[in-house]
Length: 147
Image 1 (tube, rainbow, N blue to C red):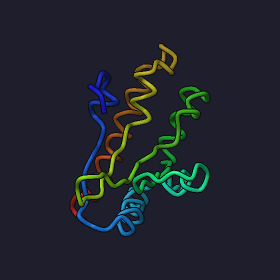
Image 2: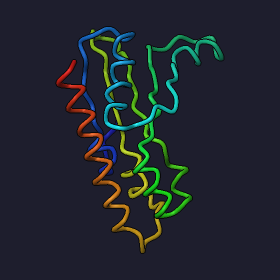
Image 3: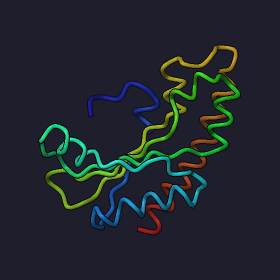
Image 4: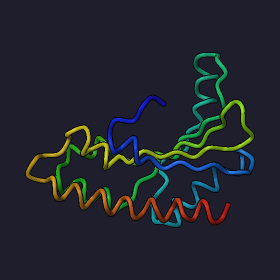
């Protein structure tokens, strides 16, 4: 990734796992669910690209999840913010190492950094960012502890 220019990019969560890709995807999904994130969808990007474009890419899965409190609070700030939800975590393999990578950019920080919220609701968005950060920190700590 190129040089980070926003807190969303600079503060992204990343870890690596020493397990098979097939085991990592449901493991990361479960850790999100144990922190009260509902799984909206698990999508295998590599399979979708291969099926639709006939091209091979590294194994990559998107875990699309949503936390009810985050969703509710975003809607209360401005219903248009729902277009920035839900949260997505990517699980992928990289050429050159035997690890499985797990990466997450904060949707709520992106709301702030992209200027998507009404200016009079900046403090509410900051509270939403803090709550989201607490939830994702729990997820990340559990991923790193239990892997």
